[in-house]
Amino acid sequence: MPGNYLDFERPIQEVQKKIDELTSIPGYESEINKLKVQIEKLKTKIYSDLTPWQKVLLARHPNRPYTLDYIDLITGEFVELAGDRAFGDDKAIVGGLAKININEEKSLSLVIIGTQKGRETKEKILRNFGMPHPEGYRKALRLMKMAEKFNLPIVTLVDTPGAYPGVGAEERGQAEAIARNLREMAVLKVPIVVIITGEGGSGGALALAVGNRVLMMEYAVYSVISPEGCASILWRDSEKAEQAAAALKITSKDLHQFGIIDEIIPEPLGGAHQDPKLAAQYIKQAIFKSLGELKSMTSDELIEQRIEKFQSFGIFSNQ
Image 1 (tube, one colour):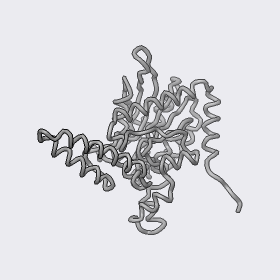
Image 2: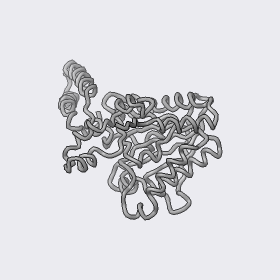
Image 3: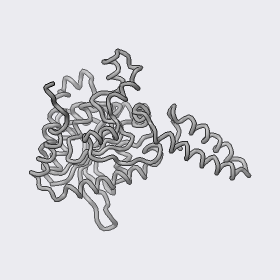
Image 4: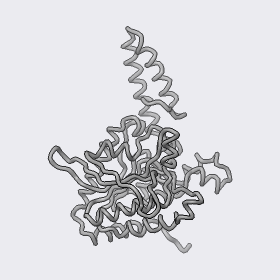
């Protein structure tokens, strides 16, 4: 199991520590096997009953696969394209042309776009902690328009705390860039499949999430505001983030029940970081399934279905 244990994973960490200690000592194979059985039981018990806040922590896990990890694992070819042709290249959003192998003889061409976080400090700064600037959203839209021109399906992978709220971003039209993406994605003539892979934070996530199919990884979260931000507004205390997470209904299970997302993509026991290759395989299968369901629809039908889908969200009452 990878390092960086979360607080609720401490029982697993303790058993794993015992396994590591005994592994270097000959003659303890039987005890090691018993501990391995124990650790699997612990994992099943812990991960089958996670609170919304614990799922937030898993969605933010530092070892969790990011967009470029998934692209590397699911595509046979990927050509990254840069820049918005207006201001610059935002490294918080990556995208380009890709081929996903269906079998040894056949592949699927598409445009794949996603938010990208960093791991080490230098990369986190380069990627702006996964928070895009306006030029990032404009780059994404440029690639989507290119996909439409060449009749290629679009897949977006979303994992962001939200759009960057800095002064420079606001000066360059952050709100307008997000709003334009929402409008333009609604009427693109090609299939769009959206996958929330980690954090789906506010409008910064929605700017890449107007699709015909919206899917979520099992331990991902998707919300109009972070639990900390919600707690700061409602209770003026960010320490009540755990309470806010429960109230916001931000888990994949909740959002699937509400009809906000179409499908939950399973994750390896303990989260995608436990087995990135298996997690990527689940994503690949979900992409093929969703695009297979959409391939028979005409451009007009795709647009109509997408608009109706998002117009149906919410319940309004005069009472």
